[in-house]
Length: 87
Image 1 (spheres, rainbow, N blue to C red):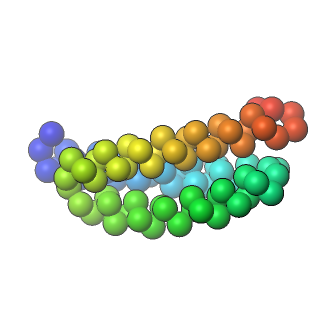
Image 2 (cartoon, helix red, strand yellow):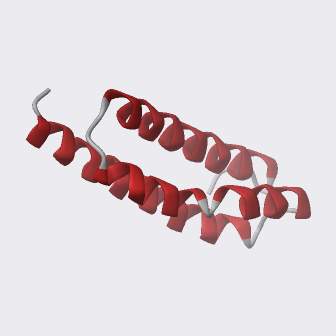
């Protein structure tokens, strides 16, 4: 992957992360206190991801992938543990 492709990839995944963040914000209102506490730890990570998106390295790419997966997993855990199950 060349530098331009990596920058585009990082921006795309930062967008995914922000979308997940927004979806989680909606879901968190229906979640319990434990989920809210976990969210307080995770939400600031988006700012870190914005900094990662400016870097074009293999390490930043792997870190971004990990963040997106953590957010997806958290969103799914919220949706499966609230009353009514799915969103």
